[in-house]
Image (spheres, rainbow, N blue to C red):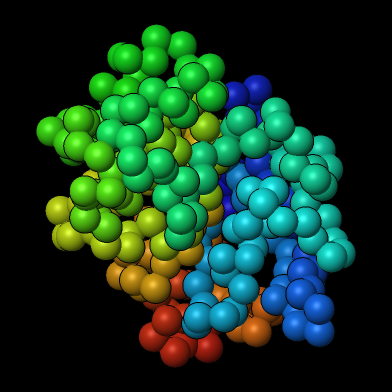
Length: 244
């Protein structure tokens, strides 16, 4: 598959993962996972509950450290993930990372200062319009529905114009209109040379946006798909899978 060029005109991966292992005591959450993600790709991580999807994203974000294996971000080893690499990542996990007692606007201004976003007021306006939350700016986060909190979390992750979005079930609590916004957001991000690594239980959503996918089971890659067509076949039970 032809790799989209990076900003420097090369086709180097944003992310390389080799033999990644994570153990919690006697339990192995990930067992030898390997893959690469290139600019312009939406990399989908599928699997049942407990398969290791969230653990994988936490490792990539630098929230926890691996037990073994290699993570390389932007061409260099990143264990632990350094601050300058984290600054190029936009992360949405199960916890929104928002202060429930602050308003939407106050939360976004806080993170804009944290990431030293230039022209913060203008950038905040851009992301809230993109996510359709401009009418909720002065409401406290705790007063919002789960769906609106998820939209604010997505706005927070986009504020500093990250190269890569790490999205752990970003469709949680979203209605159909909001899911369409999410699809458009992911496609636009990838079209401009960014990359997305996303988990979801909504297979239809994954098929709409994925350029590659892996399916985890008990911490191992059971199968992978090189494009949306292979992903459809795999989810339909076809044998047309890529051996791993």
